[in-house]
Length: 411
Image (tube, rainbow, N blue to C red):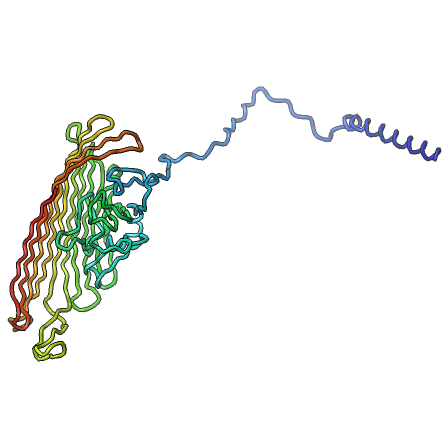
C-alpha cells in the first residue's frame, strides 16, 4: 500500500493544481470578437424606448354590486342584508330575454306557479309558494293592483316591454302589507335607475300573426328623473275568434320641489279579447235536466275588454340627515266588460257584464334612521274601496238584471 498511497497523493495534488490555474488560462486566451467601436460624438443619440405600460383602464370601471330592494322592508336596502327569500329580476335581464308578458318573466322565479286559461290575453293567475292568488299581493311602485272584488290581479294584459325591475318576496308579509300578503309580495318597479339614460324602439313579429311594437325612454333632465314606456300587442290567436289587442303605458317622474322631492308613477293597461265559446240553453236537450241543458257553442260575437289604471304621487321632505316625512296618495281603477249580444235572429240569448273596481289610499309615513342597520317607520293610512257589478243576461227565456254596489273604508 506504500507505493500505491504515494501515487494516489501525487495524483490528487496535480488535480488541485490544474483546477486552481484554469481561470488564469481562460483570462489569457485571446478573444475572437472584434473590439467595440468607439462612439462617434457627432452621431445622434438613439431614441429612448419607453417602458412597457399597463393596459389602459376602462373609462367607467365595472363593479358587481348587490341590487337594492324595497319590498321586504319598504325602504331601500341592499339585497345581501335581507334575511328573507327575495328574488330580483333585473332590468338588464328583461331587456336581454324580452318576455312577451310580465307573467312569462315570473316563470323564471322558483316557487311561482303561473296559470293562463288559454292563449295570449286570457285570464292569468299567479300563485306564490302555493298560496291562493288572493293571498299574493301585487304592487306597482307601491300601488296595490289586486282588485277589491275578488282580491286578485289578472296579469293577462301586463306586458314586459318596459325597463322594469321585478322583486318577489316569498313568505308571509302580513305585518307590513296586510292579510292580502299571506303568500308573499310581487312588486314591479317602473324605473329602478332613472338617472341612467336609456332609449329604445322595437318591433317584433311571430307566429299566429303576433306583432308587438313600442318604445322606452329614460333620461335625467337636470334634477328631474323621467321614464316612459309605451307598447302595443296584437295576435290572431290559435283558432277562430281568438284575437287579442293590448295596450300598455308606464310613466315615472321624480323632480325637486324646493328642497323636497315629488315622485309620480302611473300604469295603464287595456286588453280587447275575442271569446270563441259560449253556453246556450237548449230546452230540447234533457241530458242535464228534464227542463233542458246548457250547451257549449262557438259564439260569433262574444267580446271582453279589460282596463287597469293606477297612479300615485309621493311628496318627500327631509327632516335632517336621519329623518324624513312622506305623504302619499294613490288610486286604482279596474274595469271588466263582457258583451255578448244575441246570435243571429235570436232575442233571448245575450249577456252583458260590467265590473268596476276602485280604490283610493292616503298615507303618511315618518322614517328615522338611527344607523345604517336600524331604520324605524311610523305611519297612518286611510283606504276606501268600492265595487259596482252589473249583470244583464237572458238564456232560453230565463234571465234578469243584477246590480251589486259595495263601499268599504278602513283606517
